[in-house]
Image 1 (cartoon, rainbow, N blue to C red):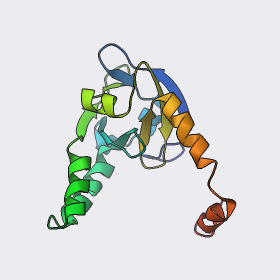
Image 2: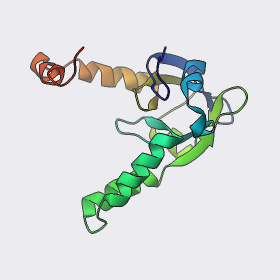
Image 3: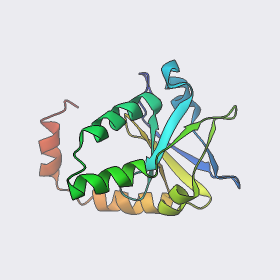
Image 4: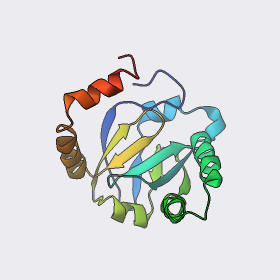
Length: 154
């Protein structure tokens, strides 16, 4: 459950239909502010997942990407990787969005999808890949979490 507009938490399981549509959980749709016009922007995430941003957050990302110098090879590669796969999507009356073939292939999605809230964005995962990533994350040392805890009051 989310308590704040445009903030996403929790995990949900859905299926991708034959038309490459996946349901965005109603709790996420309901917390989307009206200035997003029922629109998300999907793009290639890190860790083999799809990132789903509210439109107003995506506009901020675009502005930040514009500030990166295209003289830098690293910057060009990052911008290309992010913008190339970006696509605005509106959810339909059933709360579904269409995923592109390129993003489905990148995230190794088949039928099942895990949808998780990541505060300012949503991630769509192949459940088995998410499970592997979670197992790798469990290897993070406690002192690394302690460093983060100093920055955030939990």
